[in-house]
Image 1 (tube, rainbow, N blue to C red):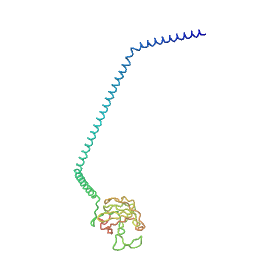
Image 2 (image 1 turned 180 degrees about the horizontal axis):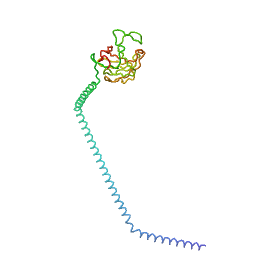
Image 3 (image 1 turned 90 degrees about the vertical axis):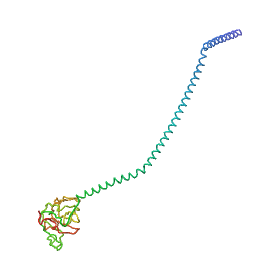
Image 4 (image 1 turned 90 degrees about the horizontal axis):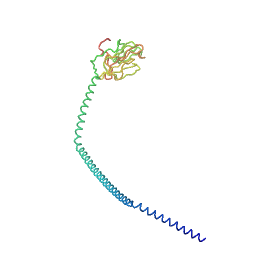
Length: 277
């Protein structure tokens, strides 16, 4: 038993020695193979250092350049701002100096422009007023407004008999007999001031003649004029209508009246001829 243990120990020692020898040889060969590469890490380190140095220099230049650019931009912005402020100040000063000088001519120009405008307006009023100007006097002659006989005379100094009313009364107009549908013409130039329906005279046209004179046409239908119209002498005004209840016995007729300052005057004193033409 002891002999076997000694043999095992001797074998184990030999194995350990063999392994140590083999490991030593391996380490030696590894050392030889690594010797040429010892300079590479140094060179790489130097290269890295140089690269870092260059990077630092580049970064330093970049920072300085950037700082220089920012500084120049700030200075340029400051200069631009100062120039803008100076230009704005000069513009405001020039405007302030010019304002008092420009006010007077502007007002003068405006006044000069207003004067022709006002003159033109006055001329327009005068020009447009001429066609609308109405004139009438005691010597003015008028046309017969309708063809027919006078069946009721003007009478304001004494009363006359009305057949339909069966009474005597004053009469401020003339009544001219005419068939229904007969044309009624304007007796004298005038402006239609009012058109209304009256119980006694039916549809009635009131016309201004100028100089405080007025003409009244009653017992009409199908009136051909409107309020505000300037109607020339001889123009159609309307047609004779059926008589109102005040003139049923007298028959269809035209009621014709002339007023002077709102007071009736005898129309026959203005009609140009004694009988209708």
